[in-house]
Image (cartoon, rainbow, N blue to C red; front, top):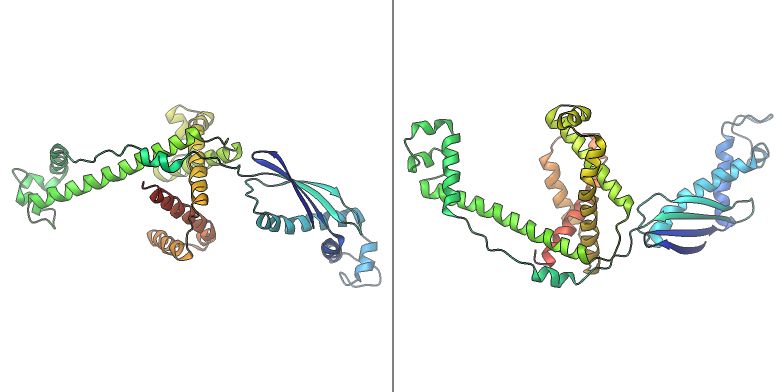
Length: 333
């Protein structure tokens, strides 16, 4: 196989491939035999004529086109894998040479992930402000007051005291309940602070990143966000998307515009984390994927056969999720 790659832009390449007749001929022969299965030829039972006889009764150009399509369909995934091409679109195929007894020549234009040029991300992460986390007494008291007002049986107690705290079960006195509330607020604040740091680091890296984000990825992410919104509306509000648009006084174009910047940011963050993981050689073991996948599946018992089809897609999602978390941990975030 003769092979060449031409870079058309930072995110698009053109590949030219020439497959020798010795390799292409098996697809040519198969195209003849497949076409002959329903062919009725005098002197032979349906589909039982020799290949040479079938070939004489077929349109040669149609046989060649079918053979070329099958050959390209077989070759393309192998080329992507062998040449480590990070394609993000379907290839635009053009047949360059197609004749019996000659090599099959074709070109394929495809959009790819661009080369990502990152700033010194470790220094950016190291220099990020890390805010001290505190839980004020007022926050604990506000939570206690909210609990007291929201519980129906609070009227049995004249005030917030040990007896009221014991009514929750698991607490010996008010001090233990307050300690539990303190811990809950602290965990929430720690999660929020960690998320703030991560977002700020990604934003600073993105500001210094020299790579343009491929529009196809932004559009794909935007469509996914809109699809998720439609499913959420149907599941939670039990109304159609058109009715939702009517209620919020927006058009679908307005929703798309709302999601444009969000999609752009999400794709950029994905590319940044992916490139850092690549440079730092961060990997995810099969065992790690299996453990996480089992955790997710336990949350949704009784998976149908239809849902099981998406297991491979789920594994890819899990791999990205774990890899991103490891990348943040590497940056002490």
